[in-house]
Image (cartoon, rainbow, N blue to C red; front, side, top):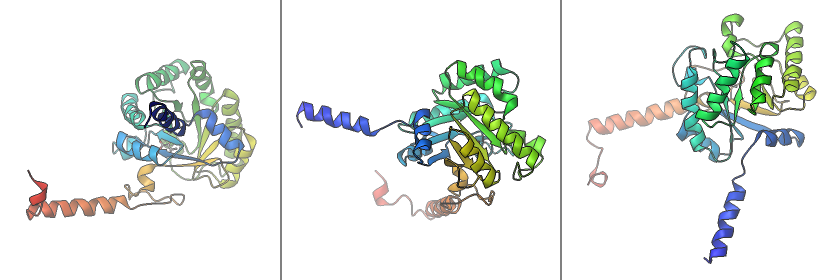
Amino acid sequence: MATFEIQFFVMSIHKEVKKVTTHTLIEMKLRGEKISMLTAYDYSMAKIFDAAKVDVLLVGDSASNVMHGHETTLPITLDEMISHAASVIKAVQRSLVVVDLPFGSYQGNSKEALNSSIRIMKEAEAHAVKLEGGEEVVESIRRILTAGIPVMGHLGLTPQSIYKFGTYEVRAKEEEEAQKLLKDAALLEDAGCFAIVLEKIPSKLAKQVAEMVKIPIIGIGAGPDVDGQVLVSHDMLGINKDFSPKFLRRYLNLYDEIQGAVERYVADVKSVDFPNEKEQY
Ligand code: KIV
């Protein structure tokens, strides 16, 4: 290949590797293209998800459950979230990487929220942060945005408030909570959030929110009439067998697949079938 051909080849490769930005998501909403989002917590999985062209990778605080084995999302620390996020970022060429601010890292005051967000952006080199709540966190959102850090909101079932809710049931079924959610969504948009996650609320209400605001609404258990969908990767891949809410679609049964493969490996080791002649030096 001549030098100019190699240069052209390299340039066209770079053109193909288009990065998803917060602006891309808003453009997608405008042209009616649905946004795909999936949680990722480590380098190897993130590399596969990025290659599969998932638009947004969320380093969710669900890492507390699926990676650290805690019962709720509350115990995971900011240091642990930064460590997960840094490994995800290293794997990614195309996806937008959003990182959850964990419980206790932003509720104190807006300065704490800003400092935690700066740590995530600086130490993990993330692209944006996400936090849970409406009116009560709007001041923090505004302050984070003053530092040029994009913020994604999260309303409906907000798992960091599980002890206040007392249950993981569908939220905002009653008129009063639905009205508060509509007001909160408008406040988050007005504060400058680039997108909002709506978790486990009636589809009709989610549709109303998606029609009301200009920013993308990403649903989880919020029906089809929103701008995109997010799932916890361990749930949709069937690594986690214990969690089967109605909204979840399992695309694989990895728990059984991995267990089967590992059982075969153990049997092969015990019977000295592994390593065979070709698998040694
Ligand atoms: O932490 C998480 O995985 C989340 C999703 C459920 C949206 O916040």
